[in-house]
Image (cartoon, rainbow, N blue to C red):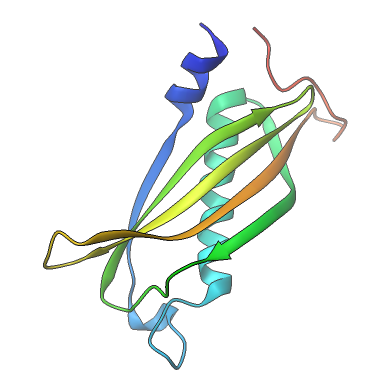
Length: 129
C-alpha cells in the first residue's frame, strides 16, 4: 500500500448537529468547542493512518472564517497533510450545512501536529511501509 493510499483510507468525516447547549450568547458554536471537535477528528485521522499511539503536540493556525449557527449540521473532514519521521500533520476543515436547504460552506480550517509514541512515550516512526 502506498502512502497516498493510506492518506486516502485514513480520511475521516464526522457529522454533528449544533445544539444550543454548545453555543455562546450570539447563538454560534463556541470556538473552543469547534477546536475540541477538530482535535478529535485529527486524532482519529492520525491514528487511522499510523495505527499507532498518537499524541497531539500542537495546533497550527486555526482560521474561523464564518460563524457556525445553532440549528445547523457541521461536517468535519480530517486528512493527513504532511508526514515526517515520527510526526505527521492533519488538516481539518469544518463545513456548515443548513438543515433544511442545500446550502453548504466552509467555516473553519486548521492543522494539528501529532507524534507517534511507544508504550514508554518515546517517539517512533510514524509510517512503516
